[in-house]
Image 1 (cartoon, rainbow, N blue to C red):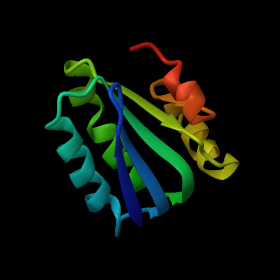
Image 2: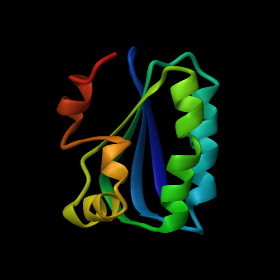
Image 3: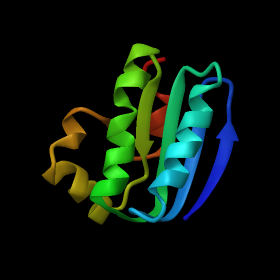
Image 4: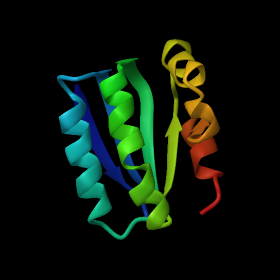
Length: 111
């Protein structure tokens, strides 16, 4: 798993490349924790190069939802492959997480 960080005036972006599973979820957790130390309004997760997500990977994202909500930080995931999006849909997570097709769509989300 490679994670690239990009900071914009309105969003902190984690660009995930590879598999988000038990062996890499701690790395993503650490990067989200670092993002939460910054004065951000939105956290975007770029999933364009995310090839796989396990229950451990989903758990990392879910575990931060309460903190993000309490701090009024909007979480937006974008660019998911059909395979990864299907995992979110099967578990109903697309109903509680903001998932959009592209970065352009992420930029259009409420700030």
